[in-house]
Length: 373
Image 1 (cartoon, one colour):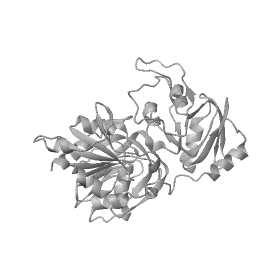
Image 2 (spheres, one colour):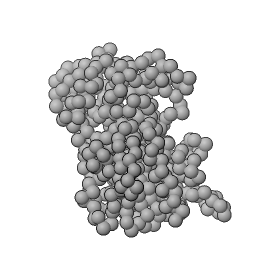
Image 3 (cartoon, one colour):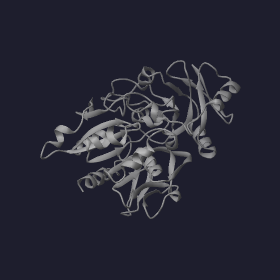
Image 4 (cartoon, helix red, strand yellow):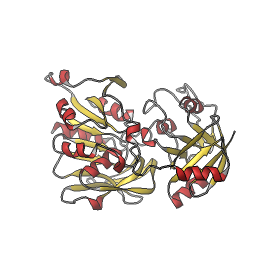
């Protein structure tokens, strides 16, 4: 089935759908990971985006229930050079096409993904439409231009949980509180995690390190958080423009100094706003499993998993209060910071990997140490 990919600047590519008919609008971005497409697809940070994989062959190991990073697929469409419909993997329980069809996500193959990626790297990420119903260039370009885009939009509201929940036995559990744990003389560390679009592996890792987790909606207020009396507060990743998220910055600002805080990706950006800083949109973002980052506190370089289109502007922060701790070695952008007065640290990238390298797992240990005082 013929499919058309149209960008807001008038650029058009033609391919074919491997998931049937459909149409999707979103910001067209690319991911450089060679594997991990299931984790990419189930990462809530991709809400509102059309994802292009740069690796040419996708689908060769199928999908399974264990590698889900959330409860569903989040990109509006998925673009690949060549789709493999016959996976070879003992862990596979279904094909990539099966997963996309289950959630109504359009998958397109058979076009020059390298040309699309080179265009985005030159011109920047832009709005686009993918369609099998309408393959006329003029009509689709007009639809792409008419889309509202991500800037200024509250995309977190689309993915945050409706009610608190816990985490046990590698899966979400019914929500509760930490009362029983706190009554124990040897209680585990208790962590409240703000769900801005949380990935399951963040919960897995913290639970494996002995933390009792309670995940709460993004709009949970200060009184409710402090009433739980957690040992620490975790700020998850999430989609879109941090400046567009409603009702969170003020909450985080009020929590500073009350409890140790660790933020990842959007959580890092929200902390930057809570510190009084600002964020800006990157030209084409950082997405993939091969981004080099330097830890300025140790001098070590790590290869990291990343997925973000916005960045904290360190020039907007008071250097007497906030210290830059990590930089991206490709463009020197901010990849991590810590507050000099309050117990708060954050990174722009994904130390929980899934997919990607495990180099940055030490950051969870820093959070544990900070909570233990």
